[in-house]
Image 1: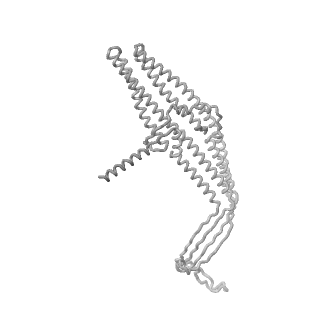
Image 2: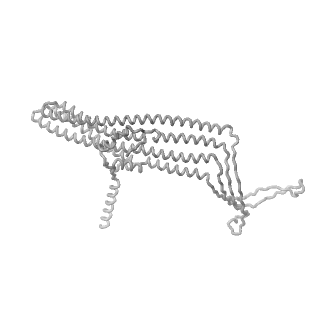
Image 3: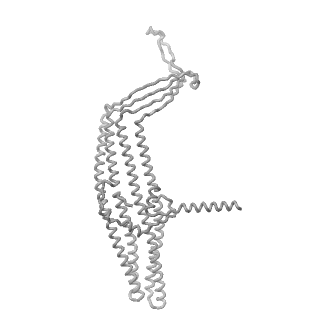
Amino acid sequence: MKNKLIIFFSLLSSLTLFSQEMTHSFSLQEAIDYALENNRTAKNAQRDIEAAKKQKWETIATGLPQINGSIDYQNFFKQQVTVIPSDFGDPNSELVPVIFGTTQNINASATLTQLIFDGSYIVGLQSAKVFLEISENAKTKTDLEIRKMVINAYGNVLLAEESVKILEKNKATLQKNLDDIIKIYENGLEEEESVEQLKITLSGIESNLNNTIRLKKVAYQMLNITLGIDIYANTTLTDNLETLTAKHIDLELLSEPLTVENTIDYQIAENDKVSKELLVKLEQSRALPTLSTFLTGGYLSFSNDFSFLNSEQEYFGYGLLGVSMQIPIFGSGQKSARTQRAKINLEKSKDELTETEQRLKLQIESAKSDYQFALEDYNNKKENLNLAERIENKNQTKFFEGIATSFDLRQAQIQLYSAQQEFLQAMLDVINRKVELETVSNKINN
């Protein structure tokens, strides 16, 4: 019995620890930092950088000394026959079949090769460096996109949270109003239409509340995926929508000059142009000679039986030093065609770089305009919400005083609920439009 209790409490402790591990709490900046380390796309982008570093060393190593060994064993189970004259002094003498050599032999050798000059190797070294830069820029772009995705997902969760709170408050207020009007109606001091109008409004609020609660669950799951954690993990957020909106109001960003050359998309397009230039150099370098040297040494042994492992077996050493030069002479225009094709691709990349520059300028200006509108709309929606609240309060007072109709009250309530949602969306738009401008311009101020 005692052992069973020990096992039970051990399992309970393990489940508790597991539950704690599945709980995460993040501010927005903590969520961004976490995603940059744990998001699956971010991790693969980092792996691409590591692979590029290995490829760079792989390219470097091709120009360093290379040593290769080989062991060749031959067994002539049927030896080749040749013929020789029986009398070397008489060319017309009878030919005699003979067999030269032993039935078995072994050759163990090692060869050291060293590249002395190869134009394509020099270009390859430059290309490896550019490829690493491309991988690093791709990682930077991935990080920017993940940052934007986290902020959007984080904001959507806060929007859902605030919407639920407002809808629950509205539902409670409506329920109280309905209870009050029912009592007045039962006393014969109000028409049945007034009760029905409030019931319609309350039904709409309840439907929106239930839908928003479901959307909140989906928003949390989307955030979890973006962060790189389990979709069903328990995640809590420490920032709120209002505070986050205030942090993302940055008027200086609108007046600050944003340089296209500093954007990651421009740098990636620049990398592409440089890589095309290197391809032209590579094709041109193929017309140059290639020079290399080699040193080979080894041992040979011969026997009619397999006795190569015996200590008495005799081995004969040999060595060879040589230089090899390969000179391209004639290729039927193949090299010229490949060079011209590389030059055509280079011209295309130059035009694409110019196109990217112009497109980025437009995107930055568009993002600035969207952000400025979001700020203006935020202030407008904030003022509208204050007005809608005052109108709804006045109509509620007039309704219970018998001055306003139930239809007037319902219109004021619908206007208030709409203003509430528009204000929440305006706050989220400020956050999203700012991060959009930061992403396209690669200008991030945390």
